[in-house]
Length: 406
Image (cartoon, rainbow, N blue to C red):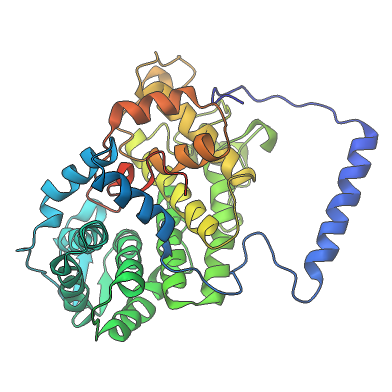
């Protein structure tokens, strides 16, 4: 299978296949209604740790390659260690209330919170590779500083801000709690912060652009893993599945994209408006493609991160429609990011580029693990290595996921 998008079309299915499909669906529905049945997006019986976006096996692989001086991992590691996020002299700047308006205006603690969270994750990765206690202690210092102070997020961007910072915190915490042999005395207070300050802001989702809710669900899933909260995990995964289907179009969806029921997009005109005025729907197009590829990249990244966490937790979504939507979204956006001329029917013949360092996780899962041909995504991934940080919630994915078999 390639990652080249195709225009919408319908095929009539033979009656026998329809009958078989219906019978299969009925059987699956019956099985899932039995006590103890395990849904494809249900929380695991026992959570795997570290298990938010990156697993112990992936960490071990990355560490081995870095210590051997192998590329691209050594270059990715050097890039990370040279960044401001790995500085052992970093001073955390927590505040009780983080206030973020549209596009972080006003910005009262927004950048500080996001970057301290990324720094904690960076230090956790540095600890794992080097086994230098100073990095583990710095990650703990950052997490402790915020858990001692923060109480709330306010203003219009509060849900998105909470999602962005809340995506990085549990990645750091998982590595430190489950691999660091030293003491983290305030890990319980950090868990309380995630449970009381972050989770309530994001778990019920958002009716904003798709990248918002996808980032919020990424944070909610990661936090749920760290807290071992099966109820929140299931709720977040259900919202994720619904939003992903409404964010990336496949020709099999029908004449128009799927929608999130609570948005009441009940006419084609409303859907076209929500899709930034785009009225021609092709496989791989996203709800924000015609806005810009930067925000589209946020949504794609969150989809890949949640799918990766789900795989680590024992439920592999890459072989489902989630994986197909991710594959097609990556291929479609990568094609134009690489310089393919934009046709007149797409976004009025002009795209705002800037996809960002968001392809490594999905590419590794779909191409390297499943063996799916993804020429456009492969070309862009290799071109962008080593993938750095978008300074929001994406960081160091060539190091952690580049050609990683674990």
